[in-house]
Length: 241
Ligand SMILES: [Fe+2]
Image (cartoon, rainbow, N blue to C red; front, side):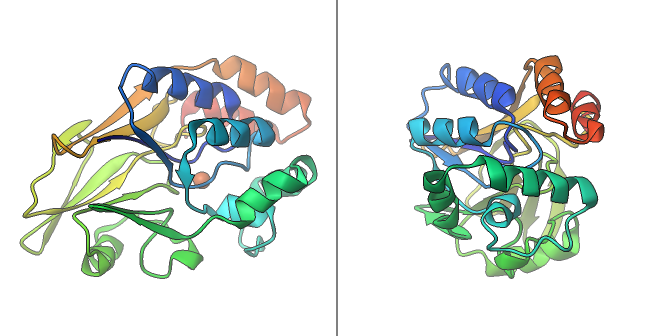
């Protein structure tokens, strides 16, 4: 079974289309989305349509829940807030139902999906350091957890109580270890690589690969500016920050 696992599309249709094209060469059996379909970008409906076409099992990101008022946005920064208010106006009733139905955690045979952390997933904390990784490893019943949220692709590995961090693009899963794989962001990478990030998990070969693909950034930026969204949301797509 080959899984296509991706996260943080953030209404960036050009990036999402590029990732879908890249996945076509990968013999994917099942698509999974680790949250934040919407927010920041200007194509929420188009991205939700693609999720439906892929039949991607999707879990909730903070922006998805914020768009349907299931989570508070007082802690969102100013541009994120502005984008969420804009998004609320643009999504159909049917798409709002879909966002409202998204669950926080989903377990698949040998792995688990969560947007931020398994510890209090409803708080959408950023899993960026060893301390938080340690707590999540303690809660994991599966060998691998796939996460998003930080928009930074990378892998925490636990072996005999020790935790290391790797930015290796491809790893072989050792059943004696545990892994937290951040699949990076499709539509707004923040790891100084402006290409869209996506992950492939081959459950038979026990291999995880994180890949990148280029997309038409200029077109997305133009659409963001034309929609009257904050220019910073367009500019950051070039820098990948
Ligand atoms: Fe996000």
